[in-house]
Length: 302
Image 1 (cartoon, rainbow, N blue to C red):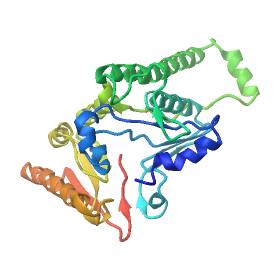
Image 2: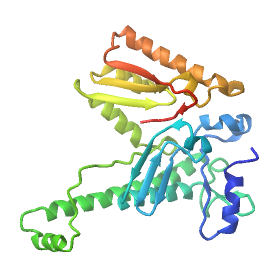
Image 3: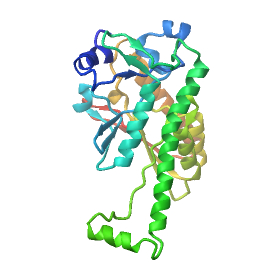
Image 4: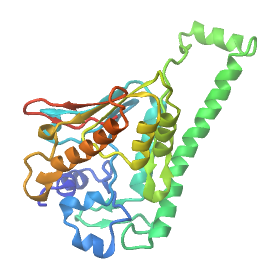
């Protein structure tokens, strides 16, 4: 359309060329005849880059929302703020840089080009592009893992009796002794075209190992579980509380054309799933609820 990411960000790029970098991710799966035939409004069904992270020094906001007006007015969504978390901030900075490196680079004249030596996502060799992208993203993941392993080893060593009493006392005297951590954060990445399926593997493991006394809460604005996830939910012993969007709070409710039928499609999928729940007599264990609020939309996922 006339108003898009490029038109909105070009003025910033032109005014602050040394401070602004605009990288536009393009899925390698949308190419050739498929790219020509699918309308822009629906091409995200083929694949997209969906990370929404905002970094301010050592503060990180993980969100399900972009910066459109409606997200600040009448949309229920997820927001996680991590304060004073340099390790998390560094990880996401490196991750965004890595994805940016394998994306199209917006130029001041409103053209795009790839970084020197980088394969093109839809004009170049798909396998070669995906291999390069895999290496670039995995560099970030493996580097973060190595840093954490070294930090853990250092922490374990410093906690051994007598091994670092002086250093601990010195730190305590200077007021820099950190308290024991009470929260662990595991960033999970899913980029299937690049062969990166960490989130999928971890989620399946969590669902598989959920015990009888466990209660799992799931929420999504667009209920479309994979068959593997549905089988795990129906086949395990844990309790499930699943929060969904009612048709009226679906972001596509009232849309023109084909998009207007999307809420009904999700209702159909929901009914199919719940029919299976009832057939297996699992209504007490697996419960579905719909979010409904007049004038609002629901977009939370987690």
